[in-house]
Amino acid sequence: MIEATARRLGVGELALRMSIDELAPVPAFEVITAIVREYGVDPTWLVTGEYDAQTHRIALDTEPARHLSVVRAVVAAHVKPSEGSTTIQPDLRLER
Image (cartoon, rainbow, N blue to C red):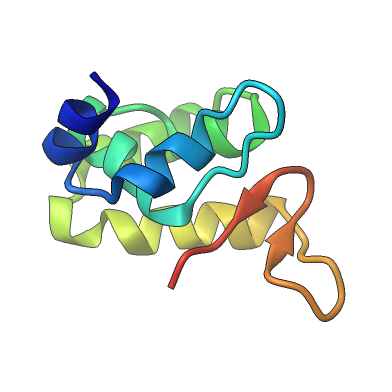
């Protein structure tokens, strides 16, 4: 099931497994972007847990190729990285 979902989203299976881990989720940037692209979910809600009609509308109206920039903007606006780390509070880790 996870393998098929990763294929459908176009992300690595490991990235998806890490993103949905029940004990210590580490959402991968590529997974968040794929969920926004594939399911039309508000990126602000995925990152912060709070719904934002404006970012949702932007994500829905944006070409799929531009979802990465939309998600990056949301992350930059709402989440601050730990100093000297690629880990972002609380659980978001950017994949490169």
